[in-house]
Image (tube, rainbow, N blue to C red; front, side):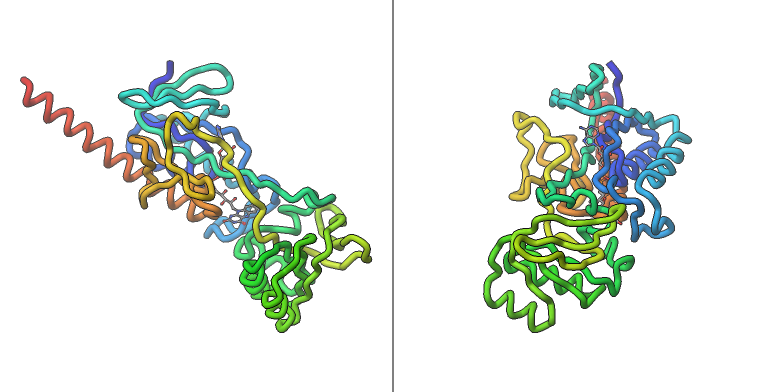
Length: 309
Ligand SMILES: Cc1cc2nc3c(=O)[nH]c(=O)nc-3n(C[C@H](O)[C@H](O)[C@H](O)COP(=O)(O)OP(=O)(O)OC[C@H]3O[C@@H](n4cnc5c(N)ncnc54)[C@H](O)[C@@H]3O)c2cc1C
């Protein structure tokens, strides 16, 4: 069985950043990554200083190359299937059948999107229809955009998107919008379409129009979706008893510590949408805290050993 100080599970910006700091802190670290990041559907990521516009896979390749300079970090392409708590750490089962023992674990496994089952939606998601205007609003500025969302919250979301384009149509996909919400949007010349969506038509991922039932296509060249509904990419077995919030995200303190001793959760696994730079920042924070904790534990053991001799 491989034995490590720390196992980082998930090699997105959160896990990669944690592994870098741990490796540099001389911690025997293994980074296990299934290589299916949340943003893999998109060609370019924005907002990470010095890497604005980089493709998600180029970002990861560069980070992986940096990590290979540290003999303290092993990178493993594999999928974690199960984790068990032991008195002094964790055992981790991976898809290929091996088992790893690790004193500490950082979960940086991210989220998966649950997209609406609209014909053609998968073709445009991440290409011309996005979740986060801060990530992709600049590229769509001034365009005729679709806003997919419903309920009162769609007003705030549409007001955010309107920062980048005033030519908006809100599609509620068959849901009735409360009267005041509808009036508030219409006062700002934002059209509301409550009919069910039949299809999104696109060319090479570029949205051309949104077809609603019993009506002609409505021309739109891009858009934003308010909430795709996400789920954890990896669920810890319930027997471990990790505390989750009402959105099924790991509850942590400011350092990423969960309620399970030695287990940290960072990035999208513990937030709705961290973004690349904040996920990387959380990786740094968790790694620093975890290393400090291990130093304190080692000092404590040495103190006890000295007292016993
Ligand atoms: C369409 C789209 C576009 C986006 N664009 C931007 C943008 O431009 N700028 C920006 O800042 N943010 C953007 N984001 C958000 C960004 O992708 C996430 O916030 C960020 O990737 C979170 O980082 P993470 O490390 O927590 O998770 P991820 O990057 O999702 O990485 C998690 C990793 O864990 C691995 N994993 C999962 N389960 C297991 C397992 N059981 N065993 C081993 N490995 C596992 C996955 O394969 C994956 O590699 C976008 C998101 C989407 C959906």
